[in-house]
Length: 121
Image (cartoon, rainbow, N blue to C red; front, side, top):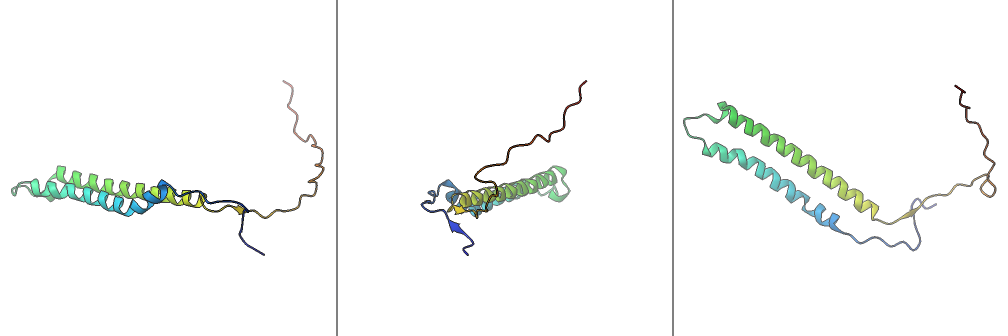
């Protein structure tokens, strides 16, 4: 018994942009993370020595915004990776489903009306 039987005569679809994007996703994730970490780093260097960055509310707000940006960026990268994998699976070989015999396949039984009747108003 074959567990997976490929559909005879089926040809795989050509790979497209999903493979290009899937191979670039690690670099996209790294670039977005580095960019979001660099923004508070540059702001830290731009502050004067008289101001403590960890006690400055605007700097800490910037840090929290960049942490949120990294989380959103990673979530977007994961969503794109899932989408690429789904497209790769869909473009893969087609398989034949196991058929099961129908008892009334040649002459279907007549439809009976078992629907409840509407009440007259």
